[in-house]
Image 1 (cartoon, rainbow, N blue to C red):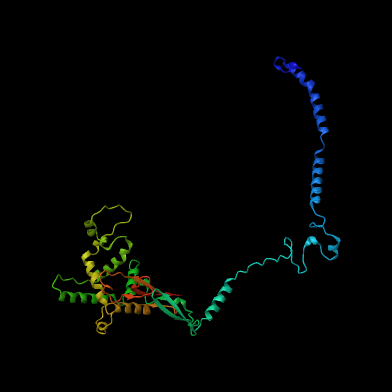
Image 2: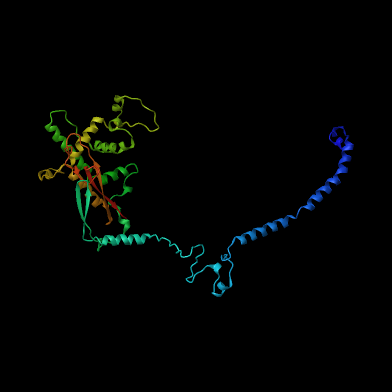
Length: 359
């Protein structure tokens, strides 16, 4: 059959004839090969049987396999495979004599709070020393105090602003009128006191006289103080004359630049800023050697206004605020209302008391 090697010389008809001739022969060879091999299912069964024999052959005679109960265990009333002791605890997976691990119990919030309260009660009547740098403060532990005669407030609608009707003023003036209602007992009286201080200054000074303030100028000056908060610029830069004299590059902005010069001249605003504190000076307090004589009446007026024109609830939350002060030449900058509190991070400054209202 060497002629089959070079089959390119065969015609198409001869190739088809050879394929028809050898096809039955190839089919017969494949059939005999399959018959000589063992069935596939039988091979799998034999392999599983050998694995089972090997696993049983590896076990020792005395070793008990889990799940294989014997007669002795059945007679005692329980299967060894269940591995349940007399107390009903499952000991599967544990070595003989091994105790069951206990789950740690995390105390809840109520337990922690009760423990903290017990610790505080144990300190009642005792003194506790708190040290800060070189200072020591002694605190005495006392019991909690709750007011016995606490007032019950039912009429909550009456709280807030009183003696002011917003409907009596136009929409353009209502906020300005509200400011004057809460800032001054009578703003015209404050204006008169400021002009009196200007008159005293003009009588004692030989320099240029200061012009008295009209009611319109007085209100405009306070309006400029409030309006300055809308601009991110220094006070002197709010007047165009000062900004132009300082030079520098100007940038276009969507927000219009401030030009307070159209409302009040800069020198005039400086006069207002200089003389407005004189409206609260008290000669009576000065004669009594009160260090707050220059500003005490402003605080008194502020508190009286809130007692009369604001109805407050009886529950208040007290807090504090320390405003830092850094004098350059003297210890306190020559100001009598500057406090020195050691326990503050910056001990020198103005101390304010804050009240939060609960409605």
